Structures are given as C-alpha cells and as structure tokens.
Figure 1 (cartoon, rainbow, N blue to C red):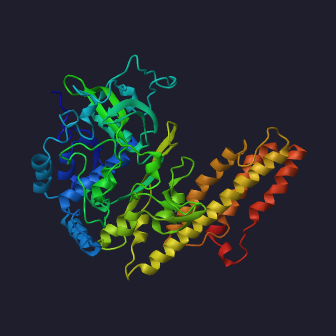
Figure 2 (cartoon, helix red, strand yellow):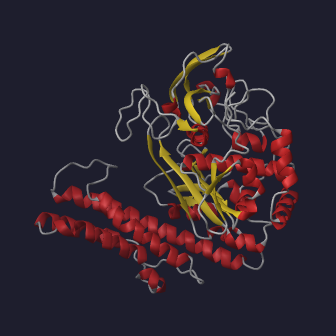
Figure 3 (cartoon, one colour):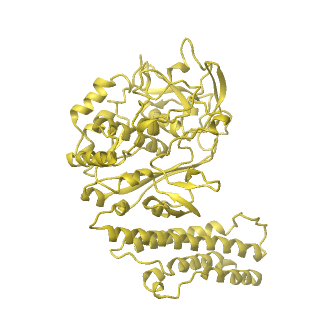
Length: 524
C-alpha cells in the first residue's frame, strides 16, 4: 500500500535558529529539534494557521499541559517546561512511535485527518471530487480558468507534502454550500457547513525558538474532560452529528465540518485524486441551541444582538490596527471586543526573558462564508506581547504602553475614517461623474487609503515603541490632510472640484488638539 508517513517524511519547512534557509522536516524531527529551530514556514498561510493548532495540541500531549485543571498549577508546569529548554526525546518517540505509530500516514488504513469510509466496498461517496477541489488557488468544477491552466479534465497531481498542507487548509477554512454527495446512515446530503476558521483572523505568539513558540501557543482549558484528537481516536466519528467540542483537542482539532480522502500515486509521492464532502451536520434547527467553542487565538467582538463572535479577516486592514485589541479588552472597530483567550494566559507565570521577546504572528483569510476567497495574508509584529505581562516591576510601563497603543490606534482610525468620509463627499460634489451611493467608496478612496495607511503605520510604531511612549497629538490628522491633498491635487484646476475639495477639507480637523499633546513628533 502507498505510504507517506508524516512522522518522518519531510513536509514542514522549518527554519534553523542560525539563520539558514528553511529545510523540510517530519513531525518527529520537528519536536526533537524544536530548540534548535526558529520557526515553521508553510507557503500557504491558511495551512499554517491550522498547523499551529495541531502542533500546540501535540505539544500539550508531550508536556502534560493537557492534564492540569487549575490555572496556577498549569502556569507553573508551563514555566518549568520553558526552563527545560527542549522536549524530552523519550516522550517524543513514545508519542509518535509507541502510542500512535500508524496514525500519521497520509495514505494508510487510517489516513491522517481523513475519513476512509468515503471509498472502498461500502463507500459513502459514489463520486470523487478531483484533486483540484482540494488545492487552494486552482479552478475546479465549472469555475473559469483565468490565471492557472488546470481543469478537471486534466488534473495535475500534487506532491504529497503539499497535499498535506492543502488538506489542513481545507479542514480549517473550507467553504460552505455544495459538495460531493455523501450518504451516512439515514442522512444523504450534498452540502456542507463552512470550516471553523472560515474568514478568520488569528494571532499566534512567537518566542525566540520554535520550542518556546510551541509552548506559548498551548492554551489553558478549564474543562476537566478532554477528548481525543482525530488521529488519537480509536473509532471514526458519526458524521451526522455536530463536531465534538470538549477539552483542548475539541477546541483545536475537533471542529472540522468537512471530510476528505486523498488518493495516492503508486509510490505515495503524489496525491492524484481527492474527495471533499461533509463531515459533520449542523442543521438550522441545531444552530438555535448549539455553538462552537471560543477559539483561543481570535479577537471576539459583541454583535448588536448581544452575542459574541470572532472578528473577521479584512485584507484591506494592516495587522498593526489590531494590536490594541490583542493586548486588552475595550472598544475596537466600533464595538466592545475581547482579547484572544490565549493572551490572558500569557500575562502570568512566564520567565522574564521569554516575556520580553514575545512577538505575535497574524494569519488571516479574507473570504465569505461560501466560495469566494479574496486574499490570505500573514504578518508578524515587533515584541508587543511583552506588554501583556503584569508584574510588580513593569506594570506601570506596561500599562502606559498599552494606553499609548490604544490612543494611537483610536487616533489613526478616527483620522482614517474622516479621510474616507470626506474624500467620498468631495467626489460626490466635484461633478467628475458617477453617483456614489451611501456606504460606497469613490474612485479617490483607494488612492487616499494607499497614501494614508502606510504612513500611519510608521507613525504608530514610532509613537508606541519609544522608551517613553507618547500621545498621538495631531500627527494622524496631518497625515490624513496630506493624503486628502495628494489625492485631489491633480483635479483642483477645475473650479467646481476646487470648491468641493475646499468645502470638505475642514472636517478633517474636527478633533484637532490645541493642548500640549499636540507638540512633538506625534503632531508632525
């Protein structure tokens, strides 16, 4: 039988701490050498976001961080592991070679993260979906061929390492709507719910080594009862029921809505075909009483009806605009928000050297609930997560910096919002043509945003990373005025345009600060 053993086959590009190029490794080598590695670098950000959740769960299994029920005990155990500096090689080998030796094969009898019931003598799917359905960025089905000339009549096989990446991305970010029909028990359907991270923006802490990063990514779960991960489960789940939600494994690897099965080449080096179908049923009636558990890596905001939901990814927003929201609860994007649950766990019990080095990496995928995928993105911040820490030594400095970050973010957002609003109004009154309805953007909007937001980011970091963080003053208002002027300058030779531009320019100064805070670089 073809095989691709994810324990030993090189499929995760890992960058060494000495600064060399990333080299693919298997899961076992990844954990054995995590202390000598700096990071993992998948080319597909949606796969990276899912992989970090999988690696965090395995980290908890190897260190016993999944066994504590009191936060203080759990935090002490995490600190002891960080002081240890590396994973216990005996525990790594025991987990992969003794406890689950046959559960990490991409094509075995129990293929990793897949459902073997989709094919075989009693196949629950009469048809396959095609390898293009699995691969992100490829047109599939009746989708028009634009930038990539692959189609279902001539599918191109995928290296097994890449197929594993696409598998993870599909399980976490897969679309809702029509899929390959499946019959399981009394349920026969050809539709699926969206993946648990569909359209999500998640933040993951980074340490100085991959070992530190993996430990920092393990969240504390208060629940006494933990369930198995898909590769740890003896039996296969009932796909006619909603996903399991208990314990750490349920939160990180138990929320899949899709079921996938890959078909390998004869030597296991390639994935030549795939089936993608529904893997759990969440009916409209069930949604009235059932809800998924809170993801520990996401910002959550309150909706108008009082419910709480994760903030969605927006490719037009730079990640620095969310830094305030990952450091503290408060108002964000116009409503009350809660910082990622994991970041609450990073406030206490960490060694000082680990705390001061912590950065945050964001993974986002701007997409709708069904099939429209706009853009995925990733970004890494400077060492901002150190300001989560609240010890007696640095509480005043941390509080002052968080306040500066919040004020700078609010000032930047307010100036950016007024710029967008006034640029639209100026366009509407300019007579240059084209009606702009309420809520629409104007032909000037993107040019103004492209001018304003990169400069606002530079000013933001200068303000908040200084040894003595400063108030924003009028700095962001000046940037908005500059963007407004630069965008409209080429049109103001026309009298009507000049009058419209002058009429709406004054509103940019509405929150102008005439006090002492207006001085200094923040007011530049």
